[in-house]
Length: 212
Image 1 (spheres, helix red, strand yellow):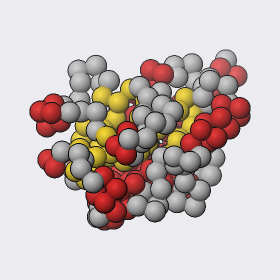
Image 2 (image 1 turned 30 degrees about the vertical axis):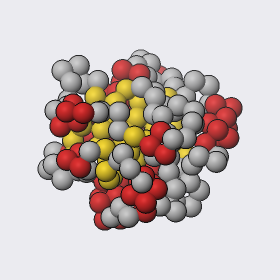
Image 3 (image 1 turned 120 degrees about the horizontal axis):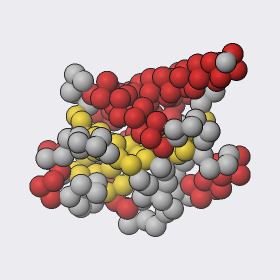
Image 4 (image 1 turned 90 degrees about the horizontal axis):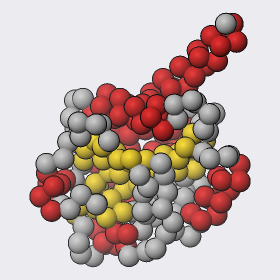
């Protein structure tokens, strides 16, 4: 769980930068799925242009608090789409505060310079509830609950699930599961389609290179 880094009036203004370095879209936006897919795909191309880095998804959170299960829900949905994707953090095996260091150590032992996509819930202002944010750079989990945890990711996706600033633990416990589930579904489908498109182009590129 992270505290939204888009503070103050900027929260209601940011959409997508001209350089496509970030995206903020409400999950009910009819174009949310396609915008997430395009943004993630463009990030994969810019951060892995030669297709040599293994891609891993680190979905942070726990199913013990409704508001904090966004990450595990995304991880579980991704697992249902594909058994070949590298996914850390599901409802069955969540990645959370007590094991995140071990998860990252294992990830880096298994892969050389992996491209990590981090997913987590966050708290923000009332008018930002339901927004999905994608941004280059690392995720800093635990900040909403004043926890110091290692930063994660070459880029990250966060979903604003409720209001932050006071009684965060209680807020997370009283977050609507429907909202979190809907956001997780949109995020997971966007991630899967972007990954599939990127993987398909990599396979096509490899085949063309071999035949050439």
